[in-house]
Image (cartoon, rainbow, N blue to C red; front, top):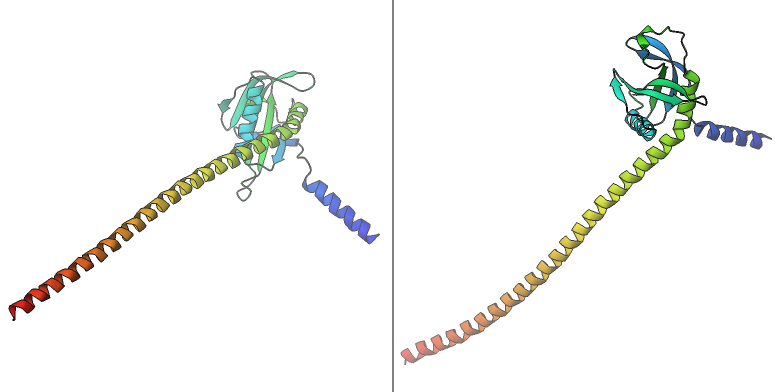
Length: 214
């Protein structure tokens, strides 16, 4: 029984660890004003999340404009009823220590609505925003995986280039070594020839000196 309980705890921990992030009701700050928002914590850097959101909206035909620290997508249809929104979204680093984790805030505005005029209890579009963020998570995972594949491919190409360079350098060194060995051999032969010539000349020299002494 104890063994079964331990296994159950391990399985529950595994499920909890790899559980899909879920969007929740939260508050976002816009021009020092607190507004209801859909909020989700994601195990990815804020820069990656923002790029993934930008790409996701671009695929739907929407381009962002920068408004304060938010990306604003105007006249976006979202949710099961295809409601029309101006979508304010931003991703922030979760904390100084957690650089690879971020918090995403999504505020849903009516078309051309001024958020600064909204009441603090106006939860317009929150359910559609949470649905978007929950459906966006698998997209983000695929987006990040693609980035990792691209980065790995670039590293492989970089190492392959270095490997080819080292092979060429090695071939050049072998050629230089062979040439150097040939030059050394030529030098040794030349030294031997000069030694032989020098020896013969000294013999002639000594013979000449001997004749002078007679």
